Image 1: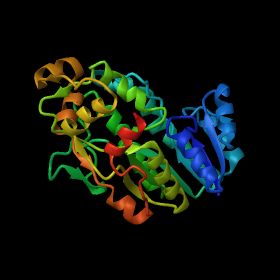
Image 2 (image 1 turned 30 degrees about the vertical axis):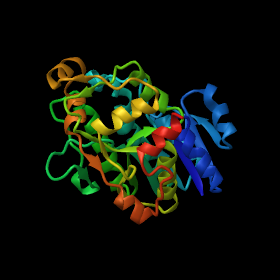
Image 3 (image 1 turned 90 degrees about the horizontal axis):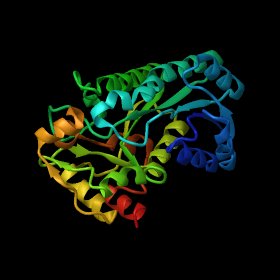
Image 4 (image 1 turned 60 degrees about the vertical axis):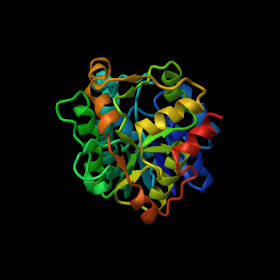
Length: 306
C-alpha cells in the first residue's frame, strides 16, 4: 500500500514511519524543512518538503505521491508547556488541525485517495456526567470560556471532517516514549509540576510505539469513525505523578491548593488535575485487534526511565 504520512518527522511520525515500512508499505513522508529529509531517508521513506498550511503545497505533494491512504500527523507544539496560555501554546497546531486537515482532505478528493486517518487528542476529558472513564460516544469537553476553547474546537473540526470523509480520527492519549518522555520529566525533576488539590483528575496515557501500532492497524483496515488510542489504565494524577517522579529519580511533587494553582497555571490545568476523566480503549482493541506493548503507564514509565 502507498501511504502518505503528513508530519513524518514529528515525535509520533518517527515511530510510525518505520512500522509502516516494516509492514511492507511504500511510504512518502513530509517534513517542513529540507534539513530533515535525511531523517526520512534513514527510515527508508521518500521524503517531501511540504507546508501543511499552504493548500498548493499540500495538493502538489499528494498529487506526486498518489497514495492509497493519507495519515495526518502534523502538529507544531512547543516543547515547553504553557497551560496558562493554552491558546498561544497550541495556536500553530490548532491551525494544522483545521486548515491542514481541510487541505489534506481536499487533496485526497482531487487525486482520488480513498482513505484518510488523522490525529486527534484523548488524554483527559472534562465531561462531568457519568463515571470517570469515557468512551468515544461521550464526546470531548469544549472547555467553553477557557483558554483551551480554541484548541478543543480545532480537535472537533478535525474529527468531524475526517469522519464525514469516511476516515478515522484517532484520539491519542498523553504520549510518552523516545523523543517525548524527557520533555515531560524535566519539570518533574525541577519540582515544577505540582499535585493540585487532591489530584483526583484522571489521565489516559499511551506509549508512542503503541500509538503508532494502532495507527498502522487503522490504515491497513481502512478504519472509520473515532477511536480512543490509550492504554488500559486511566489513572488519577495522585497516582501517576508521584510514580513518574519516583521513576525519574526526582523528589515527590509538591502539593498546591486549587486557588493557588488557578493563579499560577490557569483554569485548564486545574480542571485537568482535579476533574479530568480518562478514556476507554475497548473499541480500538475489539475492532482493530490492537494489542499494547505497554498496557500500563506503570510499565512504560519504568522502562523509559530505567
